[in-house]
Length: 88
Image (cartoon, rainbow, N blue to C red; front, side):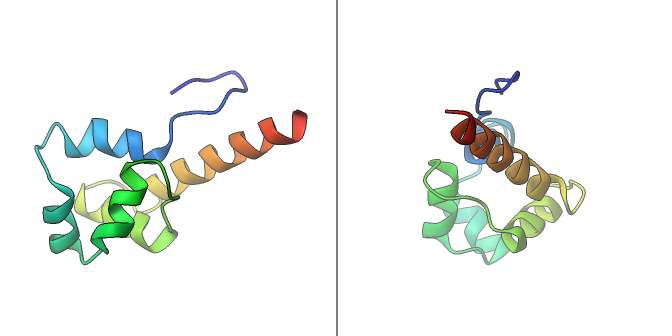
């Protein structure tokens, strides 16, 4: 993640690099085991979509994180992005 005012990595990149790849998990498998829509999960991991709070909580439980872990990361990304947009 980049810091100091520039946009941090999209949560999808963080999920892919730190949770999916190290565990050799596919989108299909995680979607099936969590009940999250496969296309929506793919959109998040590809950086096209934000991670909704409900899915963030489901993934946090799935990966053994605190319930608000991914939701907070998503919020921080959005806040940093919007601050950067407003300053331009």
